[in-house]
Length: 451
Length: 132
Image (cartoon, rainbow over all chains, first blue to last red; front, top):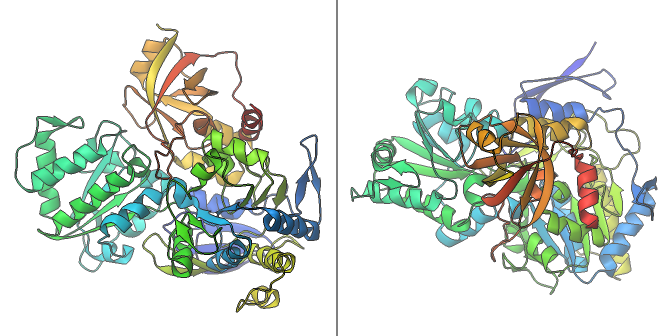
């Protein structure tokens, strides 16, 4: 007889679905089935059960092969690496709990490191734009209950946030949106005719890299001024048509993704998208939300924000927090050889950074903390496998609309396996010893383990 | 038919990429999901090559062999798509232009036929490229 754990939070994307049901064996050691999750979320739960999973740390040997070592050795190596480095980069943090992030930041403060999260290759541009011009935003619940015009700009939730459309933005029937998708207009802007665009009422397949022009053209159209015949590959009639739909919304929202943040213009594209939202508030009520990728990248920004005042790329090497994207961001630091050790947790720069940056990681003392085998773990000097957060250990995480949730533990990790928070607490204590100071006001390892 | 064609490269997520990534990046399914380039039928014609042929993608920033498949979310002539992962990142423009974000979308590339060259797995590809 199996038991079912209900209201489980999915630790994959920023949508943070909280209605999963997971069937586990009676002794609580095996996941048998996952209900309500998308294909990616289900795979994340089921992969934690893989028979070939690595359960002990591994150290790279001279010939490039890996040899198993104890957690104690791994903690000592990590603490020595961080304590001896002049300016270590501590990157990742988006696939772990806020509790673990906080312990990591204590270590960074003690050793004078740079803390950066995956926003640096994701929504970092958006964070810069928000600091420049502010952001009129709302929660996903408001969108479910109120939004009748929904724009997806440079994002493809059908693939990247598979349940976003059905839970919040297009299909659900809310308090003022009783007709579900029949009462909503959907506008999609993308250089490809994506699976999301195929569902749209208005699909604008723009020329790649011309987002800023099209956003500016919309602002012109809102004011009723004239436009060139074609902007960014879209005819002016289509632009005016879209502008009318936007202006006549009762409650509208723009969701935006990597199509605008990673395209030339970057933060300026987002500036302009936010200004479009601001303009629309002269006619109706409009909001804008970033489609955050990792399930707790928003949480990393929140924890860094309340601790140091900056959402990513926070340099603590001078004894106080500095933030200067372009200088203190991971890829710039790596490309300019400005860091001398790399600690990665809950992310995979080996697969998701440009190869020129990965090359630098491979040549530095490096530790990768990750439950999976990834390109990062296979070029790092030390790989520390840990329990899956949100599957084998709970913890706080933030949805893409900045709402915190408590993820749940559904199954026991393999025997003897450490969690992120436990490993980081041990490293923090050892780094404190090496640096000759005990962290002030921080919970002890025992407290974190008990939590 | 040309020896090579010029295209504009973008990358991003696909659901196959997400599932294969969570299933293990060292597994063949990840290579099948991300070691590909999606090309428009019109560009296949220009290159003069069958679907599912291996091709070499080269930019100012690197080179990589991937399998060419027909665009799944097209048409988008002139535009090529490699799902986010180490194959895309072997050729994308790493310049941040002073704001932290590499230019992952909009890299000019050359695509040429490489029928007999293999598509490496993610781990092998990265381990090989970091030694260069």
